[in-house]
Length: 216
Image 1: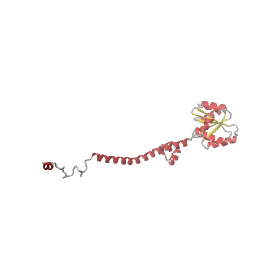
Image 2 (image 1 turned 180 degrees about the vertical axis):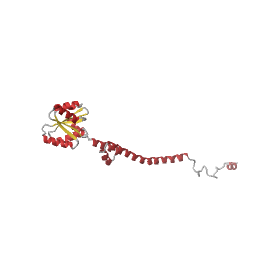
Image 3 (image 1 turned 135 degrees about the vertical axis):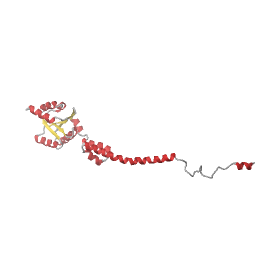
Image 4 (image 1 turned 180 degrees about the horizontal axis):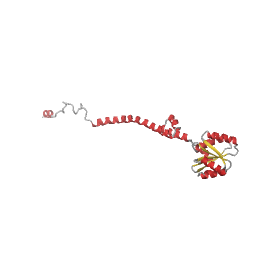
């Protein structure tokens, strides 16, 4: 029987790299069931575990760090888009379900305390971060909402589309900037315009010969 429970834990937690551990002391079966349904609606799963057997399963999966959080009645919470979303959700649920104790979390080999998980809950989620980054790059609020919720492939395609649209608009400006430069070049290389005083016909310099003869 115990081996079957350990095998079930290994099956459920295989591939999980981030999780939170909460204390369930004082929470009856009915309210725990309601909590699981609420979490499941957000793509997050919760499972009440037997600590000693769960430690064996987590150790076999290379998640030994999380075993330090298993003390007293415990439940593991995982799924969603990651630990930030998990933290946000359980912190919010703990406001109404006051018996829910946030013990801490586990991510990428690191153990987080309950206080650290609470701080993590205050960070922007994945969608919020994407919206912020794209908003700074593109500066188009309407497109930001659409891009932030799109898959990665569609996101890249939208960005490339915007870049391609911007490129042709820049070409006429570049040609307009070159035209004054060509006109200046023509003026600099040209000759003296006709009609100047130097080239006017019939305007010889006055001779000094007559003046010299009268003086004599």
